[in-house]
Image (tube, rainbow, N blue to C red; front, top):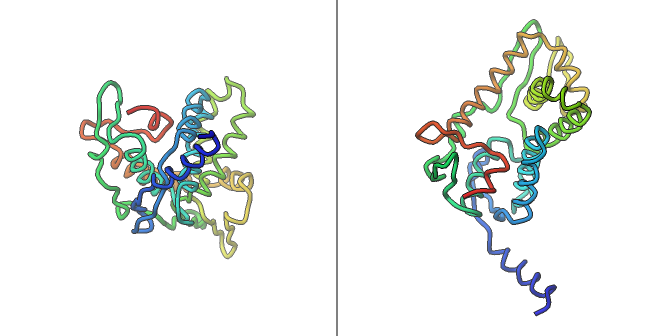
Length: 243
């Protein structure tokens, strides 16, 4: 058999590597292609890219979910956690080795979407912010700007400024709009650069209130990803590189 014909047969066989997975925000299942070798290789490359690699792995996972989904749906970053874990179990193994200990991913159970605060209105000093869990589209768009910003920093600057830069952009992801008096600024209508300029001018108190919203949801995500012994499973490149 010619290689071209064999690849065609392989494509047909891959059509059977499909799984129906529950999407938390949808409250229903969507069919997904399982992870493939090329996706695994793309992720492993990010391990050697430092801080940029962490951000790039997040972008890749977002892309994989959208590419592998059999349905056009606006996934968010909470959906992402559940989908990745379940795809990983079916694509590679239900167990994973972390620090020489083997864990069963089934022990994590199911993600309870009702535990998350998906939307919230916060106010301070006459400023009202509409907050929401970001979609994968928003997450990827802003992460690409993070990569661009990091590329302009020296290694020394990355050591001192990367955390603050990442935090600022993380806050941007969760803001849908800001209102002062009768004036409303829709974050969907402005560039990421403009969003950052606005966030940099927010009162510290309001900034901390927004952070509380983000941390609260991150804590719930970590609870879902925590094994009985307290070990937290990280959603990074290593998730697809070991069993």
